[in-house]
Amino acid sequence: MTTTFDSVRIRRDLHRIPEPGYQEFKTQRYLLDTIAALPQEHIEVRTWRTGVLVNVKGTNPQRRYGYRADMDGLPIEEETGYDFRSEHPGFMHACGHDLHMTIGLGVLSRFARQPLRDNLTFIFQPAEEGPGGALPMLQSEELRDWMPDEMFALHIAPEYPVGTIATKPGILFANTSELFIDLIGKGGHAAFPHNANDMIIAACQLVGQLQTVISRNINPLDSAVITIGRMEAGTKQNIIAEKARLEGTIRTLSAESMKLVKSRIEAVVSGIEASFGCRAEINYGSNYRQVYNEAEVTGRFMSWLRETRAGDVQLVECTEAMTGEDFGYFLEAVPGFMFWLGVSTPYGLHHAKIEPDERAIDVAVSVMTDYFTWRSAE
Ligand SMILES: CC(=O)N[C@@H](CCC[C@H](N)C(=O)O)C(=O)O
Image (tube, rainbow, N blue to C red; front, side, top):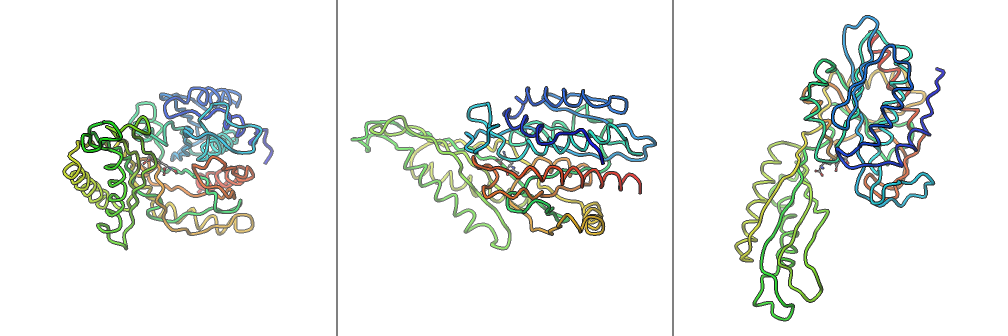
């Protein structure tokens, strides 16, 4: 295949401009400009908030296939050795969305030139890391008449070598809920603890007790995670903290366990209120549905990979992971799958030093291009 698509340049351009959810203004502009440089005859473009939707008109369409890429960055100060580091202080593409978008553009650039028999929808979706762009995008007017019959997405996987694709039928990623807990007590002088109500002590107790929800209330053969990723309290070393805030996330493999975990968290927090004489507020922020790969569609992709790409792509049938992804909402509405794409880097997702191997982009572009082509010719 001859192509003028410069995947490395595009990925690096996108890497420089990570933006928070629903503030992906430069990213949207970059995507629109790149798409505008493609042949326009077979494509139509729409925007939805900071997202972008592209319809590639098929030559004799019977069905519509979709690819979704997420667009937002993370609040992380980049520590890579790149000379194309983030130009936005405190923000970084540390979850591979720069690669996901580049791969989408790569596949799109091929089909904008040579459309398939069937229609294609490319979805560049804002706010995956929060508060979640998938559900409102799915319900939007802009997507309604371009809704795919089947859809696909991928996620970079640091732990797999380049050339590896890992997936499975059934549940791939967990149900998620954000978790915010505010504790409100009484501040005071460090020397007079008996006159105050110290929310640092209460918060420390609470963090420990929250872990007992996982270890004592969840069936060990099921899986659940509570991670507190941020804790804020106090103003100065000799002032007793009046308030404390915990910020975290809950992950479960079933919707039932999510309900159970939340009810146990509420019980534990009530206990903290009683034992510390404080007030507490719980907020669950945004919640994502599990990523569930439809068995037949996923099985067809896996068999196709084994039969056609065994020479250059290693297919791994992986286990589920406790990561979350709002692509789960798309898969609830439309059959499809997500897969992990090996990018071989020692640092994990959400790490300030993650440097995905860019050779994975061409692997994914070629696999998705060939798969859409095969699927549409069936
Ligand atoms: C693949 C990945 O890392 N996704 C994120 C999704 C975040 C969900 C939500 N904001 C939360 O924190 O619960 C993940 O952290 O798994």
